[in-house]
Image (cartoon, rainbow, N blue to C red; front, side, top):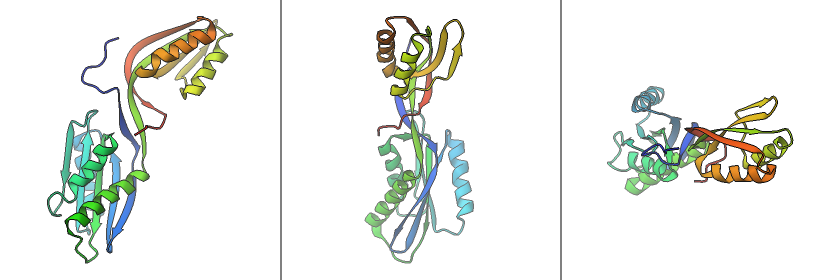
Length: 220
């Protein structure tokens, strides 16, 4: 099956957003992170945060959208150039996270932090926010149909359990038919294991190429 052009095998995505806070010399930096799949969603998220934290000194922002991070933007929102938005964006890029936007709200504590202090504070705020997010791996793979007999299904389910793969559907008729989502880099190995376990009494048929969220934690 032909690979989708210009798409990576996998990339990290935000499944659930979160919030974190960092305090530096009485200034509060509140990072709010949310899944955004378009620039319009990111812009709407920024406006929402500005309204929510209307009394804050700054609402700096950054986002990275697209499987390869094709769309990125960041804003210092009045902080010295390069001390807020860019460091925030670098955290997202460094973690390999796509389709995510972050707003860091600053409540000024009365003490100037200097360039280095601001970069450190905005970076740490995003890192704290990410600790409270749930991420996963969007991976290229195949929708697979597996057919076997009742003697082989127990062995196949055992293999799938070890691989952390849950069937999308199961049909128990004259033969057992399972539908699976399998990452492209695991398909050949899994097929071989199934054939070995059942003595070749299994059909492993790739139906179509897909992208899906792997439930296994992303090794970033």
